[in-house]
Length: 361
Image (cartoon, rainbow, N blue to C red; front, side, top):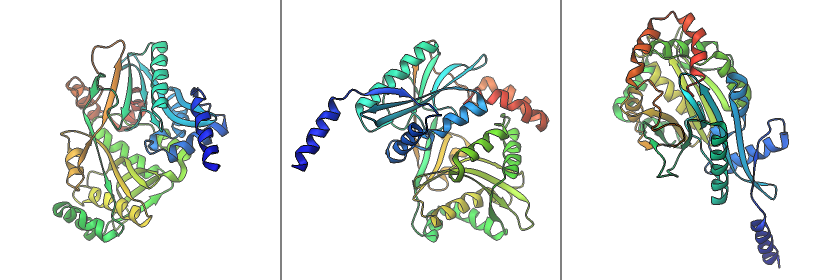
């Protein structure tokens, strides 16, 4: 009897229409339902969390469209979107700016189709140049694909020592060098040390820094799921920092920076080992090293840890463009700007940077 009732319930649910709605951040019930779905959906990532809507609005004033597909009061899929519009870099609808992952997270094909259809309708209505979905798998073979980035992630071993032994020999030697140099890691509640080293690092690379308010908002919105780790020497001098996100049983080191002396002391190597060690002790199971551009130093560094690159599928639906824009430091046309930025006083760079980087995403 119970089986028949369950079957009838399934048939009734299947006959109920799927409705696409826009998340209202003031609707606490809908926000809780959204985040509960994200926590449970295998396709979802940290960047599908509802808190990103608040971050993007508060810090960058980007117009957001956080879509969800609902049937009989139950969410079947979500698609967080934001419009990034500027004179320099064009007009884009993207899932999601400042995120390495995005696109639809759903538990039904109908939800995927409904959400992507609504995204394209919004893109047309807004008159954007293109719609960008930062998918983990290839959904649209007929859409132009940005194949510049790959991601690095792998399981953590249950025991701390096994994780150290899993690091290839040469990289393991660098970790041991950091340990021998008396380095230690500390968790920071205040972001002063993090931002100072982060801003200095991106300035040396010739790129604008995100505003400190962005990181403080991340920490406030995501609370314990956003954590800053600082590596210091035996005198307490900060050398290297990383801001990480936590999602389910994963850790994602996401923003980082270092002092010019960090490399000599192996502080960067020690930093990621300490994050790995601490994550293992917390019972986490996945270390997600995030994305890197192919052929860069960051790409090589992560491979040296024994991580293998995995493709990312940044798919573009073009409306007012003939090709995918290349708004990244690898583009040759930005080399003069990068050189100029490096020579700019860091105080001026930190003031001017947020006005530029908000439009890059």
